[in-house]
Amino acid sequence: MVRTISAKIGRNSPCPCGSGKKYKKCCLDKSEEQKFAEAIINTKQSIRNDARIKRCLHPNKMECDGKIVKAHAIQNNRILDKISVDGHIITLDGTANLIFQDSQIKGRKIATTFTGFCSYHDKILFQDIEDQEFTESPKQVFLITYRTMAWHYHKKQEQANANNIEYRKMLEQGFDLMKSEDYRDKQKDILLDLRDNEIEKLFFDNLLNKNDYDKVRCCIWELPYEVEFAVSMMHELEHDILGQQINNLELDANVKNIYLNIFPATSKSYCVWSWLEENNNVFVDFSKQFMALSIFERENYFNNQLPIWTDSIVISPRLWNNWGSEIQQALISHANHAVLYKDMEELNKYSYSDTPWNFFEKI
Image (cartoon, rainbow, N blue to C red; front, side, top):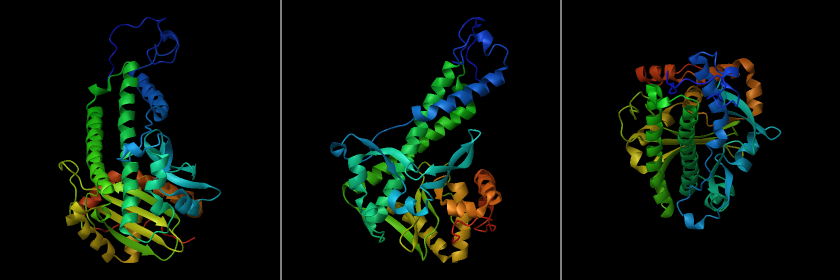
C-alpha cells in the first residue's frame, strides 16, 4: 500500500479524500484498499481537462498568432467527412473501467483534434494536404508524417502532464504513488518516451525549417476504392514481417519510429508508410516485405495488427454497424490483449489468423 498519512485523523476532521465531508461520515469505516480504489477513480475522472496542453508545436514561434485551435490529426473535410454518417464516426480511443480500450461515437468535428497548433500555423503549414488532392509528392508525405508526429508528441506531453497531476492529487488524498514500484516504472517509461519524441521532433523541425522534404522516405500502397476507415499512427515497430527484430524496447537507447497513414481519397485510398531517412536501413527492407505480400495478406496483416498497435483509428458507422455487435466486441477484445499477440510475434514470422472484421471491406 502507498498510504502516506500516519497521524491519526480526528473523527470530525475534513476527510483527506477531498469529498468535503467529515471523516466519520466518509472514509472512517472503509478499508485501505477501498479508499485507494476510490481515490484512483476520483483522480482519473477529474484529470483529463486539467492535463490539457495548449501550445503551438511549430518551431517558428515568431509567426504564431497566439490563438491555439483544435487541429485535426486526420483531415476533417477531406477524410472524416467521407467516412462519417450524420456527422459522426466511431473511434477506438475510448476507455472502459478507466483501463481497457473501447469504442465510442464522436462528432467528426471533434474527433482526432488536439490543441497543438495556433490558427496561423494550422492553416499555413498544412495547406498542401488540406487544399489539394494527395499526389504522393515528397512535401505532402512529409506534411502528413509531420502532423502525425506532432499529434503523438502532443499526446505524450499531455500523458506526462496527467501523470504529474495524478501523483499530486493522490498525494493530497494521502497516497504516495512513488512508493509503488509499478508507478515508478510507469513514470520512467513516460519520461523516456517523451525524451525520444522530443528528439524525433527536433529532426522533423530541422527538416521543416530547411524545406528538406526528401529526408522523409515512404512506401505507398494505393487501393482502387475508398476505404471506410482512417489511421494516423506513429509506432515503435518491434519486428518486421519476417520476425526480425527492429526495436528492442527494453534495451535500445534510441528507438526507430515508423509512421502509418491510411485514408480514403477521391475514388481511391492510400496506405502510406513513412520514416526518417536515417532509418532506411531497417524500414526499406520492411516496406519491401510488406509490398511483397499479396493484397489479401496485406489486409490480413493490418486487420491483425492495427487494433493492438494503436487507438488512432476512426471507422465509418457504415462499416461498424455492418459488422454487428459480436464482431465489434471481438475487435475490442483483440485490442485489449496486445501482450498475447506480441509473444506470438516474437516466436513466428508473419502468420496471422483470419479475423472476423475486415477494415478493407467494401460497403
